[in-house]
Amino acid sequence: MFDTVRKHQKLLQLVLMLFIVPSFVMFGISSYSGFMDKETDLVKVNGKPITAQEVDNAAKRQAERVGGNLQIAQNLQFRQAILDDLLQQRILGFAVASLRLQVSKEALVKNLQSIPQIRALYRQDGSFDDARFKQLLVSNGLNEEQFYASQAFDLKIGQLVNSVARTEIGTPKLSDIVSTLYARERQIQALNFNAKDYLTKVNPSSEELQTFYNANSKLFESPEYVDVEYIVLKADPKEDAKIFSEKADQFANMTYDQSDSLKPAADKLKLSVQSQKGLTRSGPSGVSRDHPLANPKVVQSLFSDEALKNKRNIEAVQTAPGVFVSARVLTFHPAEIMPFKDVVTEVKRQVSQRAAEKLAVAAAAERFAALEKDPKNAAGFDSPIWVSRNKPANLLGPAIDDVMSIDPDKFPVVVSVRNPGVGTTLYRVDQVRQPTDVDAKVHKAQAQQIQALAAQSEFASFMSYWRDSASVKVINPLKPPSNNSGS
Image (cartoon, rainbow, N blue to C red; front, side, top):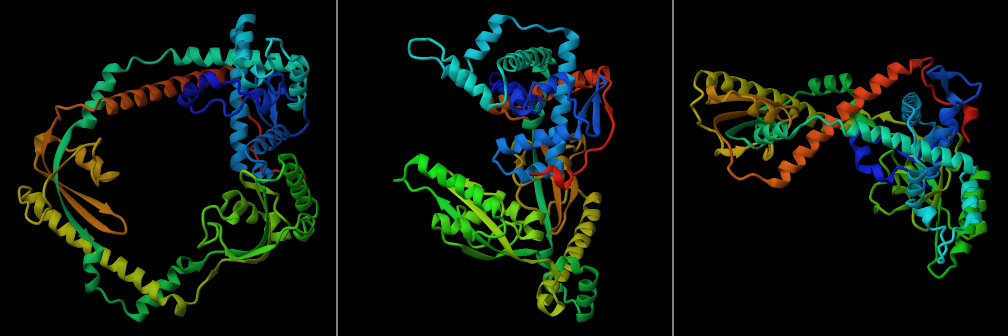
């Protein structure tokens, strides 16, 4: 595939990966000139629709590009991401046309010569292999006119995006302020009230256990799982690459065309049909990472409706270089609530943990109330340590926010932070200081993050303006594809 946006990689990361794939390969030149399909319109940009069929086709092409598993193209979230990208392309196309941006012949030639696939077409004597070039275009479903138009269009998009990126907000002073705040340290002492320390004080009755089980039976549900059989095709290092490629094609075609059994492909290619029981959506347990069924694509395919309901072979998946796998579900075991007698130990553990946590939280609240009246009392607290947002030690989330937001003029101050499932921790904060040594790498990274946020904000405003200018109108919500839309 041609990589038409390689020079803008960092920029595109800053604007939330504007171009996921080369636009002319992913969407075709029709994305720029309008799509004349008769399917239901989803969104209109400047009066021109993006259709459900267009999204379906683009989703299939992208699914093939990222691994060949077309089942992902049926995923609603995946198709929504495709629609969002198509919409963004259309809005940018409208902006390019409205601004009448132009690309010089010299810029286009320079861009083409920087594409690795194009450079590879030059012979040693410097001449260009025009026949191979045309063959490459045909393999991507393009003619020369479409190719040059799409390349020029992508360069115009690059021009536009670069112009937005160059309008960055001046942030050096802001970066210094943020870095200073993130480096500022506070001295704290911790006092933990953990549920585990109160477990000896709880002893739930049989009635309490049964009541909890009845009210929370979903907590004791065994996960759904499948028993499967599978075959694996592995390349022989001594085997000719062309021969293995032919075998791989046979493997893929036979497992797909004769989808009610793996045996024909196994017999033809002399492969053994293996089995695995108890495969959950998390994958098989007790196997190595390189196990054929440990591959996420294989697991996802085995739990698709087609595999579960119709017991058909999944499409061949390449799990590693020279390794292809196909599998089929033999038996599906749905999730079920486990009997009380089988999970009574776990029920008691959970009930006891909850009761102990309540005791810990109550004890912390009582101590906190006393410390609010006498915050100078440090009895029972751990030894003091210095923390900052750059070096938070073991403080996470609300803990670091609460500690760092205290007004130094009110020191010493005690704050209480709940740890769901664990208990409560009290933090006593009594000093603040600004370190004299500055970590240049950290400061630079923070400055880059602030600039990235500024660029994202600028780009968001830019897209909002052109979205309004293009009169974007949502016609119908995106729906799962119909059964006959898949392959």
